[in-house]
Image (cartoon, rainbow, N blue to C red):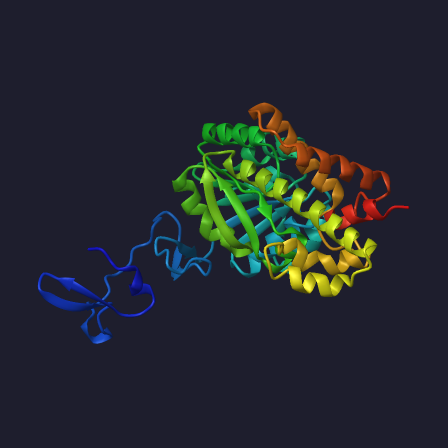
Length: 353
């Protein structure tokens, strides 16, 4: 039976044969709902729909899962907290600096482990969020790494922004262990992690993704499967390409306006409501205009990400002249002492005397 699109805006008339009926039917005419079965029978579910996608009835929230989180940096620390508090899961953490793991456990009521393997032991889901490809390998495929402790049937979710190559390596290593794998880099920065509203770009097989999504939802506003292993990382690369160009354009616009003697606040109030508007403009122009650059993703991290992007572009033949140029500009910001400034500090480079 085909449901007209108007059914989602209100009651729509629908003909069946010669009789006219209405869709949806009045409440007293609707059949009693059938008992719902959970999508995955091997784990426990509460039967409640996901907050992020209430119409997708095939997704159900876990009543509780055993979860491990490896890497408690500015992103991982609050993400693990959301898994414990919002998700209601039994969470064990590991961090290279043990004191930070103990601090997290004290704050959120979880547990701290001495090694990644120990944290991952008996976990249903293991999350990892570290710095780069080498860091990722060191906590996953070593003797004391995550895969050494994971049980068959568990799922490894990698939130690190890393290369598509290492994602495929980990997918293959996980398969050998009978473990599922999702590469799931995030966007939204420290504020998004703290507020639990990250965008998560996933790569992996659909069945594994559907099992992982209800747990990922604890720290996400948007979660999407982009394709097979590595596709999440490639999507994050596209995200960073967009951001690099947008921030440089915004920096040049504000610099131009200042040089022309315009009131930047008034100008942005107008142009942000038109085609020039963007998240970067809405959320960064005030701090940029004030010359303050301590409000987001650090330049060092952006250069790491752009190196991954440009390496992949050399491999697949993509032409990225603007991205390559902005990467050089961020190198100038580093040389100015702005390694830990946020990415909007491209303006500081233009204003350097």
